[in-house]
Length: 105
Image (cartoon, rainbow, N blue to C red; front, side, top):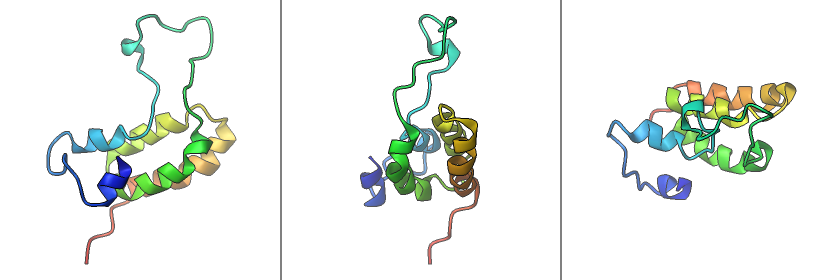
C-alpha cells in the first residue's frame, strides 16, 4: 500500500477518510471497546515488533507528515516497546509526523 501511495496512486486523497486510511497503514492495538473479552489477567498480546518495521515506517513517514491521526497511530504503534526505546525511536518519528509536509516545488 505504501508503494502505491509513493507511485502517486492515492484513492483517498482529498476525502475525509484519507488521514485515517493513511494512519491505518501501521498496526495498532485494538481499543478496549473493540475487544470481545478484555484482557484483564495479563498484558495485551502484541502481534508486531516495531523494531522490525523501521524500514516500512521510514517509507510511510513522508506521507504521514502533518496528519495528527498518523501521529496518534504511531504513538500506539511504538507503545509495546520499553520506555527508553519509545523515546529513542519514537520521538524522531513523531516529530516528523507532527511537522508540516514539505511543499512541492
